[in-house]
Length: 389
Ligand code: ADP
Ligand code: MG
Ligand code: MG
Ligand code: MG
Image (tube, rainbow, N blue to C red; front, side, top):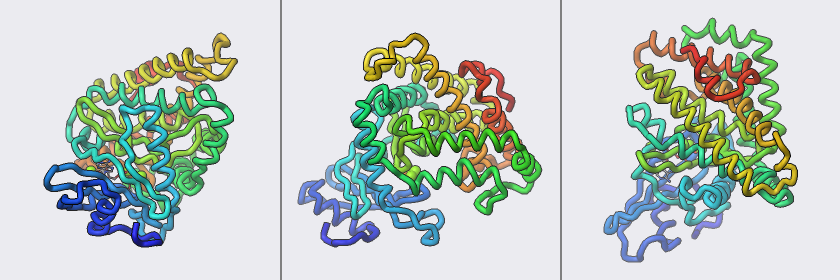
C-alpha cells in the first residue's frame, strides 16, 4: 500500500491496490465496480478483462454506511472479519471463501469472488430453490461451533481466541438492535402504523420482557463458541450445489444458539412470506437441525478434548440447551427484523398492504411465542408442527 494512513478506496484506487498486490499478471487490463449492497462496508469487484479472473476487495468505513458519518464504527471489524474468515475456512473449508490478503490499517479483506453464486435471501425471494442450503448450513455450524467450543478446541488456546475476537462495538449493535430497542419505544424502531397496537402489546408484555432480558444476558455473558454473529440469509451465497458463508464481522465468543437461531428465523421468514413454500421451508429447517445434530454428535464422539464428554447424558443436555437457546434467539430475530431498524426484504417486499401486515403479525406472534415457550420444546419437529401463521 502506497498511502500510509487509512483512506476509503475508490474504484481506481482499488485497481491500484490489486496491481500493487500482484494479484493479476502485470499485463492485465483491470476494471472495477463497487457492488456493496450491505449496510456497513464498501465492496469492490476487480476483473481482469482478458482472463475474466476476478477478486473482491471489501473495506470497512469508519462509520456505518447505512446511517452515515453520524454513526462512527470501529475499523477493527475488518480485522475481525478477515481473521474469522481465515479461521472458519480451516474448520469448514467447503463453506467459506478464501482470503488472499488482509490489512488491518486499511481495513481491507481481499477474497475469492463468489459472483457465480446468488445471495440466498435474494434468490429465495425470487423463487429459487436451494436443495442443499439447509444441509450445508447444518454442517457448517456443526464444524464451526464444535471446533471453537471447549469440547473441540484446546481449552487454553480457546481462552486466547476469546481475547483475540473481543468485538465490543459490533456486539453492542446486536445488544441494542436485536435484544433491546425492539422491546422498548426506541427511535430506531420502524414499522407500519397498522402494527402499532401489536407493537404496544409487545412493549407492555412483562413476561416477554423478562425472557428477552434472559436471552440478552446469555448473549452478553456466555462465551461458548466463536459465532459468525450475523448469520442471516443475506450473509450466505448459494447455488443449487454450493453454499458459502460471508460477512463474519460480528464474530465473537457467544452462545451457540445465536447462529443456529438466526438461520432458523431467516428461513422462517420465507415460510411466513410465501404460503405456497411453507412445507418445503419447514422441512428445510428440520433438515438443517437434523444435520447439525448428526455432525455435531459425530464430532463430539470422535474429537472431544473434554474428559467429561463420555459421561452418559452430557451430549444430549448440550444439544437440548442449544435447541432452546436457538428457539429463543430465533424469536428475537423474528421480532427485530419486523419492527426494528434493519428489516428483511422477504417481508418488506410483500406489495399488498393487507398481506404484508398479516405476514408481519405472524412474525411477531411466532417470535413472541418462541421467546416465551422455548424451554417447553424437546425437538425441532415439536416446534415446527405447532406453528400458527
Ligand atoms: P456488509 O458487511 O456491508 O453487509 P457483505 O460482506 O454482506 O457486506 O457484502 C455486501 C455485498 O457485496 C453482498 O451482498 C454481495 O452482493 C457482495 N459481496 C460480498 N462479498 C462478496 C464476494 N466474496 N463475492 C462476490 N460478491 C460479494
Ligand atoms: Mg448482491
Ligand atoms: Mg452483509
Ligand atoms: Mg456485514
